[in-house]
Length: 196
Image (cartoon, rainbow, N blue to C red; front, side, top):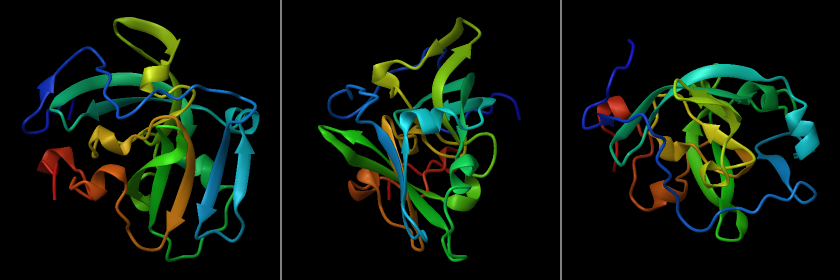
C-alpha cells in the first residue's frame, strides 16, 4: 500500500538527523567490516572489498520512533544477502546484530533483527540516496557515512545502525543498544512496538 502511515506517525519530506553521541570520522585505511558470531570462520572486509560488492537501488519508507515517517527515499547500497555469501551459517542462526560506531567505539552501537526479514531488496547497507527534491548524493556523516544500514519499513529506524562496522550472527535474539534501554525487541511501526 502506497504511503501507508503507521499509527502515531506524521509524514515529513525532510530526513531529520537523530543520533546518540558524536559523529564517526571516517578513515578508509582503518575502516573494516566484520562478519562474526555463529559463523564457521570470521571474515573481515576492507572498505574497497565492501564497495566492490554488487549494488542495489531500492526505494524504502522510513519510520522513526520519534513519530516522523518519510516515504519513498531511494537508496543505493549493498543487500544484506551479499554479505551472507562470505559466511557459512548453522541452520539454527535466526538473528543478527548490526553494529556501528558510538562515542569512540566502532562496535559501541548495535541493533538486533531477525535474519529472515532481511533477505530482500529493502534491507540495504547504503552510501547514497535521492528523493523527489534531491539528486543523488552521498549520505552525510551525520546520517552514517560511509555506510549505514536502512531496515525494511516493517521496523522502526533505530534498527538502522549508522557508521556500520559489522554483523554478528546469533542463534538466539539478544537486545541491542536501544533494546537494553527498554525499547521494543521487534520494533514494528504498524503495531506501534516502540517500547517493551
